[in-house]
Image (cartoon, rainbow, N blue to C red):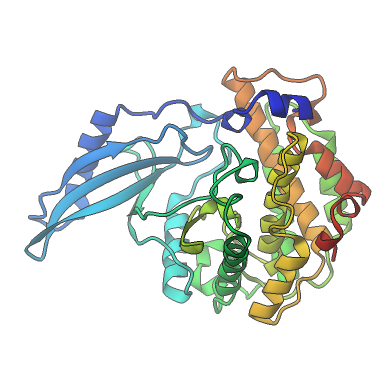
Length: 393
């Protein structure tokens, strides 16, 4: 997508989002009510009183919001809940597999072993009988989320907030990573994420992660076009892997502020754990920094002021050092790796848009990468020099 089309097509971020739920809401409500009767104690008499499938559903899992009442210990109470459902194969999924139970177990482990705010997770269902795919159920909380559509850098409650509140939110968001990375023995707390029986190092975990990204790219392009730019990036990553990546920690994976629910500019719930992994701390730091740059660059392309003083690389690194005593290293590598990982995802998103009839396949497949210019500049070593001095290491 070119700078001109960003300005002309404000709904670009809705491309490749499924337009409808796979189930009729009334049928889904009845099915959920029957299913609750199988997981609650005898005599709970569950009733689903309302159900909503948000129109702006995610590009990966489907989200269903519902309210239910049941009797527990002689008391009838109401519960506000969320079901996250794996997509069907017919939806051209964003990822090759959706281990919803793994997400459920990771969230439960994070809640048990860290101070990161996690919604209570209730149940994990491995069959597709009730909702057409495996799913898990968690509590529904209230708060504000920096929007993706339109991006929060285009004008939002966050961009319009006082500078001191934005700074508080930024520091608190970095603190989420610091608290998460402090989890002891993550390979034991989250055994499904471990690639070997032994305790991983940051370097070995990074190597495994990079190999997984190459497999993901091969899967994403198996039945469609390939991207010379992504392949150049994968080769660059292989040639520039840090020899010392520090300790291996539990990484959130999709560590961006758009996956945090805030109250009074403080994190109230940390969401979306489908990309959780074991790896170096900088995997999460690089992703948080780059995903803001992604939205910031889009704002600049659209002629908008954006948020140039927010989540700057130098500021994120300084906050993390203050919170943990660990000085982030090799951020040129990790922000480029984040841009490359996001490029593969965006490439897959646009391939889905072609499948759904929302876009046409361009003559140059690299044009399907929305941040193509950013990735090219990073690979050429010119990107950070083009950003304000405060963003450099």
